[in-house]
Structure formats: structure tokens, C-alpha cells
Amino acid sequence: MEKIPEQKHVSWGVTFNVSWAGIRRRFFRSLVTMSGVVLAIAFLTYMQIMNKIVNALIDAHDPVLDAVLQAAGVEIHESGSNDSILLLIILSLLACFVGIVNSMLMSVTERIKEIGTLKCLGALDGFIVRSYFIESSVQGVAGTCLGCLLGMVVSITVAFMSYKMHVAAHFPWLGLFEALGISLLTGTLLSISAAILPAYMAAKKQPVDAMRVEE
Amino acid sequence: MSTQEDIIVKARGVTKVYTMGAEKVHALRGIDLDVRRGEYLSILGPSGSGKSTFFNMVGGLDRPTEGHVEIDGYSLSDLNQKQLAWVRCHKMGYIFQSFNLIMTMTALENVALPRIFAGETPAKAREAAAEILNVVGLGHRLTHLPSQVSGGQQQRIAIARALVNKPSIVLADEPTGNLDLHTGEEIIALLGDLKTKFGITIITATHDMKMLSASDTVVWIKDGQADRIAHRGEFDISVGTIDGKTLA
Image (tube, rainbow over all chains, first blue to last red; front, side, top):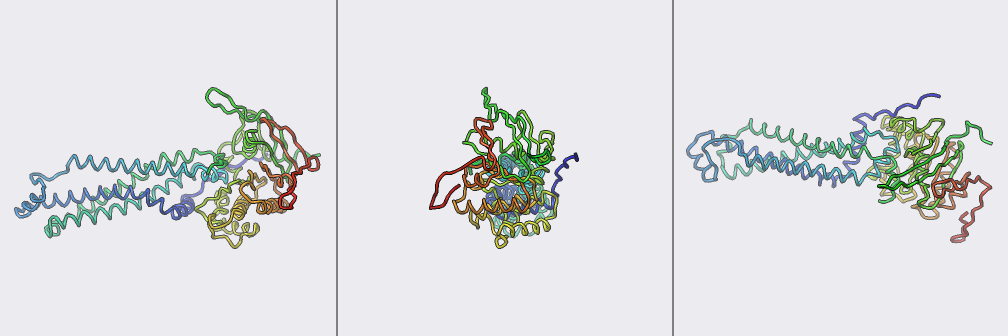
């Protein structure tokens, strides 16, 4: 008797197509998950850019500017990062990470029947893992981009309001791109790593879960 | 008398024991059953009888604690996860009581899924899906989401999805359980037509007397055992009438 073949994996491209339908039609839910990432990354971006701008102004060693900075409550003795701000950033990122994990785990629980059904139709664990990864990554990357944009706009606006045209004269372009790069990388890594546990939990669901009666 | 080749599902000494804390619950206590190719078999039993557990075993959704289930000559317990997934994808079609359609996908996308899992390109899968949706009478609802069609139409989509990979066996768990009387009758008639058209074997778990009357064989499960197995002509079901319509 011939041997039963093993089910083959569906490619990443096809999995993306299948997952995309879900992400698009679950847009509101995606927005809620995304909002956590947007806010945390916006905060990270804001803090970084503000820090760069203030440091650039301090480094200009202009007495007029020093007076403006002092009036704004900035200590101008030395430029550098502030430990308490760093702690605040780490905490906000941690909250964001837990938020994504929580929201994705809820989505796994909500979709136990759907996952079971997909397995009845022939989906392998790999397909389930990939589709959860894709969903979380798309939300994470989109949220990160929005967060970067929001953080950048707010920080530059606030800087212009506080230090007027001095900002334009000493604008830290390199620092801006550095800050955006760090935020993009952090947000993306954060959302992808937050998807690991939920995706694993989803893949472990059994086909028999499709038979659950409760809705 | 059926020959060995006619048997598509063979269950021998199927036992299932669930451990709940220190207590052991015997859901199935050794069931033997043969299902012939092309047969319409209904599994009947009150809740808690082990009916669903047995149905899941036969469908390759769960593994027995003891005994074995063979499908088309292959023992399910010898298969690894990927082979089991292949069997579910190519040999089985599943129909559920609550339809279990993916709510974020259109009718066409839902029906195309098993084809995609079978390795077909999305474009070809959608072509096959449109064809089978036409067969079940939903050619005009391809781009509708499940929430935009009626219960009966959702079950038709689910039937199309179960048949799109041309399986040998269709497992239907209370397929009329969430439908009204008339829609239920339509679904039973459709299943009967498709059974003849595609030469599939249908196994259902049901309470619906209408489904029993359409069955070739009925198995009564009681206390985890096959209490009675009756073939067409050996059982007589009569439960009276509703709205002047005979139910069985």
C-alpha cells in the first residue's frame, strides 16, 4: 500500500494573502491593538528627538540660547541622556509589549474554533504560526510608523514653540534620523517578539476544537 | 455482503478514557464499526453517550486511547501530524453544526481554503471554489461574507468547502442543528444529491429524524458502546407530523 504523503507548507506569500483578508476586515480590532504601539513608539520618538534638539542647542554654546534654555528649565551644564527618562521609556515599551501579547492572546481565545476549523481543512501548525506572526507584524509595523510620525510631529512642534527659530538654526538632522531609526527598529522588534507566545499557543490548538459548541 | 475493499472506515475496539483529576471517565468502551464506501451513516445517541467522541475518532480529529481507526486502509494511529493533516485535507470534508465559516472571508475565499492548503495557487483555488459554489446553488453569492447570507446559505458554503477537494468521506456534525425545518430539509436533500453525484461516504452525528430516514445505516451509541446498528429497512422511524408534514 502506498505511503500517505505529508501535507506541504503553504508559502509565506500565500499565507500573507490569506491573513491580509482577516487584518483588513478586522480593522477596528487591529486599530485597538495598534494604538498601544502607536503611543509607546510616539513617546519613545518624542523623547529621543527632544533630547537631540536640546543637546544640539546646548552644544551651540550661545549665551542668548543658554538663557532661553534656562528659562525653559533645562540644565545646561552638560548634554547627555537622563536616566529617569530612560526608565520611563523602558516602562512604556514594556507596557506596550504586554499590551500586544494580551491582545493577541485574546484573539487566539476568540478564534479557537476558527483555528480548529483551519486545521480540519488541512492547515499545518506552521500556517497558523505564520498567519499570527504576519498579523502581529503588520499591526506592529503600521503602528510603529504611525508612532514615529506622531512623535516626530509633536516633538518638533513643541521644540519650535519653546525655543522658537533657534531650533531651525541648530536642527540635529542626523540625530532626527538616528532617533527615527531606533524607534522603527524597537517597534518592529517589539511587535514581532510579542507575537511569539500567542502564535505558539494558537498553533497548539487541536482540530477537535472546531467542534466546540459555545460561540 | 460487503467485501474488504468496500470498507472505507474500519473502527476496532475504539476506547477513549479522559482523566479528570484522579477520576477516569470512559467516554468510549470499545466500539467496532465498518462503514462501506458510498454509505450514508448516521450516529445517534443522547448527549454524554460518547457519540461526539466517536464521531471525532472516525473523523481523524482525535486519537483513541486504545483500539484503532482505519480510513481507506490507513491506520490513523500510524500517521504523524503532517500525514494526518494531509488526510484531513484530501480525504475528508467537514461540515459543522454552526457552519464554522471564517467570518472575515468571503464565500469564495472560504471555499478556496482547502485547495490552498492542498498546494494550489490562490487563483486556481478560487476557480475551483466558484465551480463548486455553483453546484450548491450559490454562484451569485461568491463575494458575500458569511454574515451577509442566511443560515441555509452559510451551510451551503460549508458544504461546498467540504467538497472542494473531492474527499472520500464527508463528516457532518449535526448539519441541520442550527437550521429551521424547511432549510434543514433542503440541506439533507442537497447532501443526498451530492453523495450520489460525487460518490462520497457521508457520516453524520445527528438528532434529526429527517436525517435518519435518509441514512443507509444508523448506529445508536449508548454509554460509550454501539448499542445497536441497523441498516435501511431494519429501522422504522416515525415521530409524527409538524405543519402537516411527515417528519420521517
